[in-house]
Image (cartoon, rainbow, N blue to C red; front, side, top):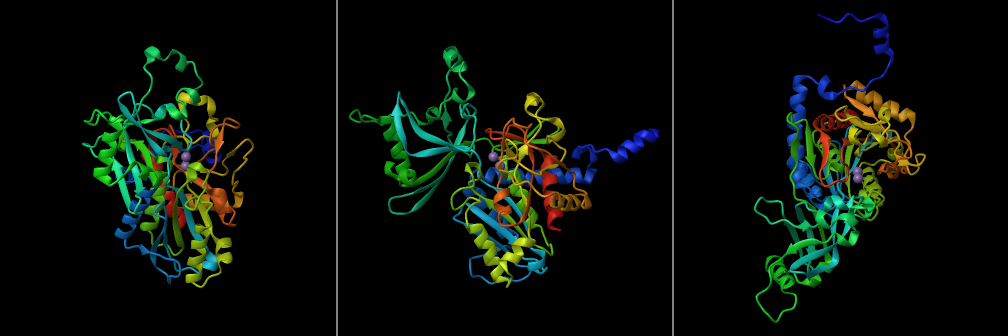
Length: 466
Ligand code: MN
Ligand code: MN
């Protein structure tokens, strides 16, 4: 029997705002679509643990969808499906629409494909106490102690003395060996455990075990190191000196897995920010919008968007300018008419750490992708604070397309904060707002997200590009 609602209750429902759980409001059909979409996402995560791999995987998927490479100077026309690769570490996938670009602008989604990890130093190899280690320098904001005593895989490239580039990827196949950062046994850990969290494991203690077998020659001093060097030489043609021009990273060796009896959640390394990059990519690949749409998958966000592959590089505005020139449009006019979703993750409200959140303005798991009008810290510092007019415009796009979404800030005021690439796009005079999936345990080796929020993010991008 239907509940009989009082006049006040009806009036309250009409006037008040409450977040909705997307699983609860989704149809059976939509829920199936969420779970199907998550399978493609998990495959992407497993294929793309570094920015180089994410770039290659995005290009592979783009080619499969009929996209071809764009180079500066190429001609373009409506309907063209293109990708532009920047040094193998960032990629912009775009489709040219039919609208006049000077009036209509571009619809841009910008996400990053780098993730916190443990990078190998340039002179890393040494032997001590029967074990061979690699010295490291961590990349991005991590809790160092979380990266000990877990299986690690090594990914990256080595440029040999003769200029030849070799790729290394060890630890992902079930029969591969993995690598390891050790921690102290609790029996001797009394002093360690009394330390401040940032000191429990020191940066210079993040040394990775890569061998333990002595080379069979009594005259050699570093026998285990020689065994490792011998292996690297046979397998990759490397000598120790070649680490000087290598870019190697240790990442968690775990694959993405469903979490929970009901499989509602996904645990994985690198949801930040592939949980936005993959929907951005697939939204452009599966698109026949009249607008010109771009997915920018960029590098170096975790260390401040620096360098020639990070969002602050001129390469991205140069590319947009090249696209404009190829279509006979003024870059300035196009920029002024463009709209951008800076798509990066946000912190999900975590009931186990409720003290750092202000619940009314926190992202709730499964309540949809999350818009942050502003990010930053200590009084919105370092933030792109989007205009209410643009927030209203994007809100109408989402609501008009039935997207379940929410808004939030990252934690309570003065609890901390964080930034995104939003401000760099906004600096080009492009209307920009942050939107992304809420994450539990962000920047840990294994982060958690909801399949509902992943799919909501994809739906939001489709709505934005319509
Ligand atoms: Mn991020
Ligand atoms: Mn991050």
